[in-house]
Length: 255
Image (cartoon, rainbow, N blue to C red):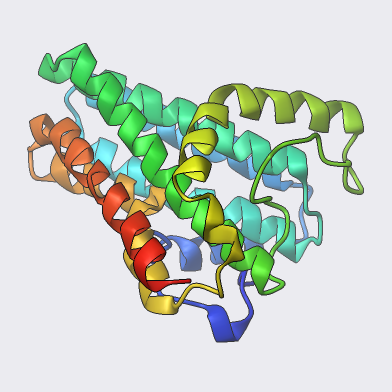
């Protein structure tokens, strides 16, 4: 089930795990598994990838990074199949992604003796990339009556949806804000007028999807697979430069 109406769908380069995620969701639809259980499962895959990096098993790490992307697609698919949208699930997914990203880079820093300063900058760049992609993607979904679980700006605690408690929503909202707030703030103020635009064209969203987490993990996995782990941090830093290019394209050509 797509997050967008057919007219506005685009080729998402970061979403290669969607078909596998749909398959997993379909197998779990009539079970007691919930989307949150699936989120925790991708955390396990991420932890195995981190352990593999630390122990020099780079091919295994690459496999579990890709598997993490596939499972990551399954939790949202399962929520849509079971018709159980959840703010708790949405925030938990994002928090787990950020923490795993941090530990992926820390593990790479450890085995390559990379500078902690460059590692921190790579992490910041990685998060800003993903935030820009999600910012524009959520604007698009909201403007064309797509999936509305995510909001353009997380400025207030949302009202709990059916099946979740307000207490849990409030807790995970504040946890999300404590980790993502600065990245959301930076990207929003770099292009605060983006939400007033016409729906973004498919070509723009496809180009921007290189900043989706799935594509970022694919880049890391390929570098691990080819024994180029020392290039992971420089590559993520280099990719961050395109943030200004994407925002420039939006401001100049997409009004």
